[in-house]
Length: 404
Image (cartoon, rainbow, N blue to C red):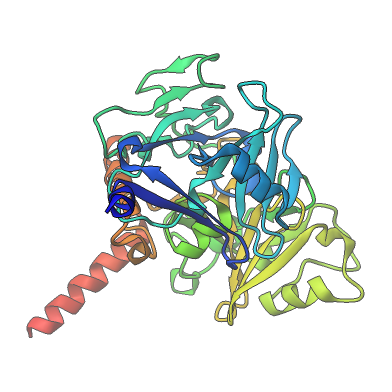
């Protein structure tokens, strides 16, 4: 009876990488929920995840036990900074933990676990956001416009900080509503570079190439008005686990618009996903591919990442040989982390792969995020994204046909 009562009074927390080679568990009392997470929006975190931020919560189990498990595991170590070490799966790129010096002075460090690798436990108030930090690095507020009303346990909003929490300027609820300056110039190319610099590419500005095409010739991901590429909210299990964040943001790029940062007239970046995969294992591998590597997450899907710092770079599928999904967090835009000069964001649209969050704590979280993004879109006076309009028109036409 006592054992059953203990189980009923606690929740199992499970952290697991995408390839399932690494799994860590602990139990947390229901009375301790929600667990508090911190979202860091600094330049370094965006470049080590490929997302718009990193998100951690203190490991709620025994510090000595998790220390022993991690130290004896085969997790890859990456020196993120002088005081922080990241632990990732070498095979699939999932970053699971960050170790920082213990606040109590112990030789055993404190460990934070990335929230994206946590199982979607069926508890509605499992995790809340306590702080958004280093917002000044984003220049445009990053993802905070849709992440400030998502706490399910109370009316408390996360606190916003220009830098480190508690020791930098605290921002008000309106300070994070920066937007792209009108008519912001677009450079000829934008760096695509991970935290360690091992992946060093550029995205050539594709807008002029799309502008001269007939609207019927545009790729499906190109906005017919602005010629910008679609950017959206992805909540699929594989993307969140491989990146360590709960919502990943991709844009799309034709491989013809991606180039090495150091050009060479004798060779160019691969022009198809088949060629890209082959180039990584070629005995004559181009050294400019750097630390780029790949994990085959399913028979027709390749996930490209940095083998050193584990940043997500591309998502590729055999069905779209000429293009890739590109991590927005690696775009080193001079205008802001959302790179709105290049990306046509689907603010307020339905997150893709939303069925993956059903039945767990992320379901309510994603609903709140979608609603907040829609309010922010309306507040900025932005029209619905072109892709959303297309989907709504197709749904209306299908409904009308069913009634005939």
